[in-house]
Image (cartoon, rainbow, N blue to C red; front, top):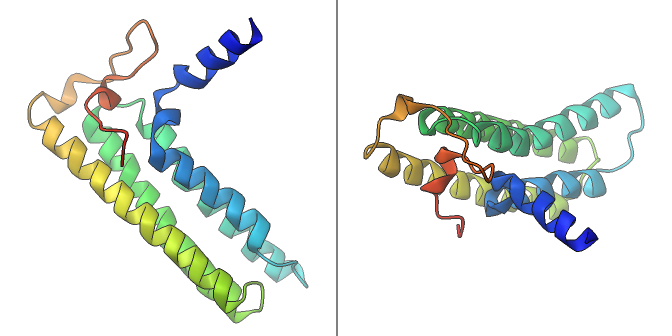
Length: 156
């Protein structure tokens, strides 16, 4: 019975089925695990901001998925802004010794992959959005799936 409850919980929110969402949450966990220990309050503020931007990538994917296609695209673009912020935080963390060269490269690779995946999702939404009125809004069906996600290939 508990397995059925966990299954329903896991599949109720369609954005959790998107590989880009999983990759974004993986990146947030990676940031937490791979940024060094701050030596002062300024470095702590840098780490806090870095973590916040990494969370924003996944948060905007989740938020946008409940909207119509045009709005989802907008939220995905906000996720791309958070990715650019993480690029800056990666560079600064490296320059102040909170991240070594190897971890800096790993962060950049993660962020480049996230950018490519979001770009592909935006293109998918644009192709599907031309077939239907983009202003139709979020249409929740009885299973909790959103209309914006119905046209998306989750195998990016």
